[in-house]
Every structure is written in structure tokens, then in C-alpha cells.
Length: 251
Image (cartoon, rainbow, N blue to C red; front, side, top):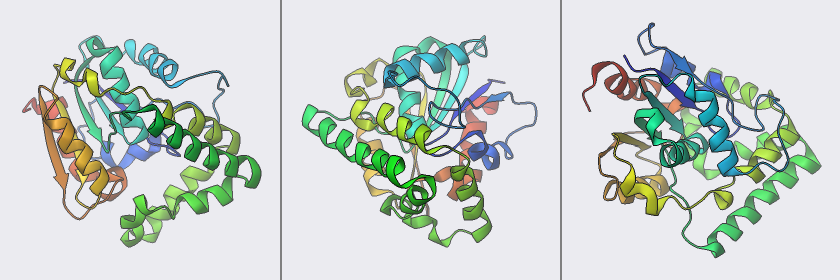
């Protein structure tokens, strides 16, 4: 049985994976490290995207004796892709949920950095609760409006457990605008990679479809009646996909 590493999304933490892990065998070892700026951990203001990738690789290395299955969601999927590109030997396979492979031009990067810095300034100037109220209303998460109130309440509490300066740091450090363009590196990833995306998540579905034609051993699963956050909207489907990779070896 392959051990599992899970990387959460922006404003998440390890508990964001709880509903997925509940659907996996109890003997499966799972490690869910926090991202920089999350869970009130210390961070270095000079840290960059690649430095965070390499920091995570150092944390995961001691769990990778027989190769880890790497699972990442959204921001965590982008970091996971960085890990696959820079530290492929640590991993046996991967599940990437709502992944972006990187922006192609410096103009796009500048635009995204400016947008994320604007969000970071909202945290700096208005505080955590105002920011979370704003973040929960972005169109990317519109499909969550039909979820049970208890599920949304738990997600809000998870987000409010962070600090404003930590999330502002994460926005500036892990911005898509600061992420390398990994598209040229995709043909070098020889391990099995399962891409997952919600059927209502049009942008990320297009990105996944473009990656399928380049990755040597990739599969794509489009989850019906779901949006971007499959950990929240379809945890059982995610658990089934990870179980196939870690326990059944059916990829």
C-alpha cells in the first residue's frame, strides 16, 4: 500500500482532507503538511514559490521510502505539480484536483500578481473576517451554495482559524503569477497522474483537457454536478480515485 501525501488549497488546512480520508482504508498512512502562511505557522517574508516546493519536498522525503501518492487541491495542486517537476523520484503517482500548470507570459503573470496583491491588501487593511466574507463569494465557489449549511459553517471556521498576515503572505508567495510555467516540463513526468475537475468548473476543465494531451501517463475524471472544490463537494469520488492509486494499483 502506497503512503499518501495531501496538499490543501488556499485558506485550507489538513482537516480539509478529512472527508476524503474517511473513505480510505484505515491502514493507509497519510501526511497533510500545512502550506506557508497557513495554520499560523512561522514564515519567511523572502520565501518564494519554488522555495515552498523544496521545503515541502524536505518534509515529505522521510515518508517516501517506497514512493508516495501525491494528492493536491487547487493551490495545493499547483505546489504538487511543482513537486512532481522538481522531485519526481519521491512519488509513485499523483492525483491533481483543479490544477493550473502555470501562466505562459510575463504579462499574464504581472496581471495575476497585481490581482493577488490586491486581495492581500484587503487582508492587511480590513482583516481576516472581511476577507473571508469576500472570498466565499467569488464565482469559482458558486456551486457550493447548495451544500448543507453545516458543511459551509465548518469550512468558514477552518478559514477563520488562520491569520490575516499569514494568508496575505500566502497570496503573495504562492500566487499563480509567482509560479513557474510548468507546461514545458509536463512531457517529462513519467509517473501516472490522475487529473480531477468538477463538471461545472469550466476554466479548470479546459486546463485539464489541455494537459492530458501532453502528460505521458495521465487520465482525466470530470465529476458530475460539482464545481472547483471536490474535497468539499465530492469527497467520496476523490477517495475512490485515491484508493485506486494507493491500494488497488489499477491505474
